[in-house]
Length: 195
Length: 195
DNA sequence: GAGGACATGTAATGTGTTACATGATTAA
DNA sequence: TTAATCATGTAACACATTACATGTCCTC
Image (tube, chains in turn red, orange, cyan, purple):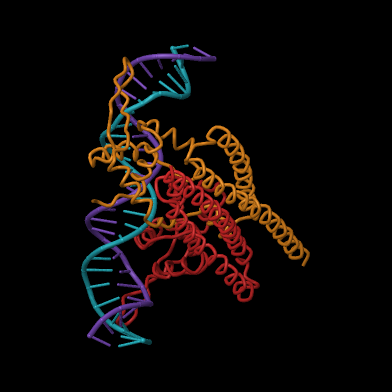
């Protein structure tokens, strides 16, 4: 069996929830795993084609008057097996690529205000996330109380909450540090001007 | 002026610390920004070539007996200006791509033990990081006490610490949840076998 | 004398996004 | 009537990693 990467396995995982079309998958991502995973159409459509060719998913065409045909894919037994064996493999480490931190790290080359603005914007984003996660959590516990999927959703959600709360704490701390730095710089400039 | 991406700007930033060769840059990354940024040789060498062609860096060749020439690059005034203007631009959002969470989210398709192992491995990694960050912090405060770069290093470091501490908390919480889930499953199986 | 660090770089390959092309339906 | 949503998909491009090619010096 050929090795298959995270993207096709993510497609299999999503199809394990329910049979879907490529379009549906995109929707589903933004409604579920969008906070920690994303796929573009350019990955989804060719990906589904490949999976079908490999017999891991099955394609059914729903003909509809007017609008184009809907291609609904569902997992096959082989697909389910592939997903299972991929789950057992250790998760690949994320490639570190945090542009915000990169800009902050080189912050000495710009006015402190620039760094502060970056952190402030990030703070607002993360505060928003904390609220969103709380909302999703309530909704989920009510609507999917008996779903066997629920505990795993909550685990992912909890990861998001912990991460965003930590980000918020760091932002507040960092904003204070940057303000101190700004004041210190002004003092230096003033002393320099007076001399 | 042509738009340039995060990778060339990262190279400019690193060269702002001191003139370096491509090889040096790779070393420098693992000793400094490696926890939140990475670049491969396949990006670094052609990247430096482009930057030199655009006049943003200057190349000096150190001839050495025996071993191959060393190509040391340093920032030009234009390069410094480019870095400055890039720093002002808002940081691009990270593309969410967390394979661990993906595997946990679909954890219902595998024995709970599989998910627990993933979380356990991640916990160990993050605990290690917390220790590493503390070590680096001490070293940095001692060795670079008067470096204008220091506050920005500490900000990045603090981000790492907050993130890893949050990850550790989430791991411990999640391990407990997964253990509960495992016990609940065993009870169900037992009840099923007795019937 | 084997292996690893030093040091350069390219080519093949993989991965992923964006923009485009098409066209119906529906709501403002 | 203008825009958005539904729905499919491809092609061009951008971005990154990996493996390879080359050769010295130093240490075990």
